[in-house]
Length: 329
Image (cartoon, rainbow, N blue to C red):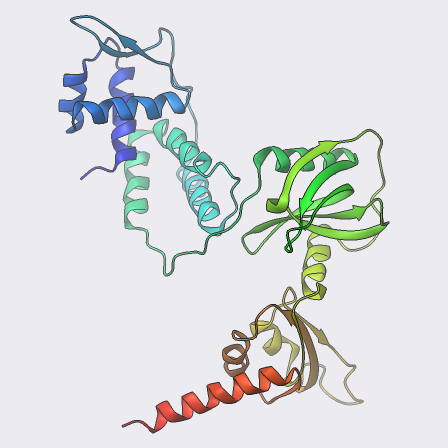
């Protein structure tokens, strides 16, 4: 059975063939009821397609005179990249508050593809499955995102209204160095002009952004992405965790990336292989501790919990459950 989006695109194809099409004719061609045709017409209008309603005995729907979608020349690889990029971005949370924007963009692109390529891409999309459903992400306002991007490009100060995780609201003047997409969220990093200190803000917590007169210079140092990762790794959380793990930096980073934990790398002793296993000091901050015991177990490396004691209790409880499961017949 064709999907609703496919029927909407078929409706557009019928209307583009010229003339006025009655509701009964369109319903018959699409295999739906008349009220569904009207709903599909409304969707085309939402996509800025100028569908006109014609009244009278021979009335129905038609496209505005002279309207035709422009051609879009894409190779097979380009079309596949664009549509899969839209799907991946939507699943990863890298969209704005207008959740339908990526869907309508995909529909417009799909509509102007050559028929043979559109059929091949439809086959792929219908066959595509994901191993797990992504979590729900808070997405930024499109106007806020574009205003901040303009401020970054032209080195202009910007006034933002921000609500922190405790619900406290404030108005900041920000010298924005860059916008970073990280693990399904959008961040802006820069200097808080009033405090004279670097700060990182989640874009979905910014309710308003307004460009101010003036300009600023970006200081030398790490790029925006590194600033965001470092800020997230050192941000204050409910629990401060300190571990000693025996292994290589690569082994630790495989389960505790730089955005989650900091790893103290000591110079190897004279004659010691720099990549050899040794005790590393790992520090991280977390709002909850329950996710850490499985991660530590998956490291399969000796470790010592220096703090907090609550984490030791959780690790012990996990070990007891695993031991009990192994003894069951």
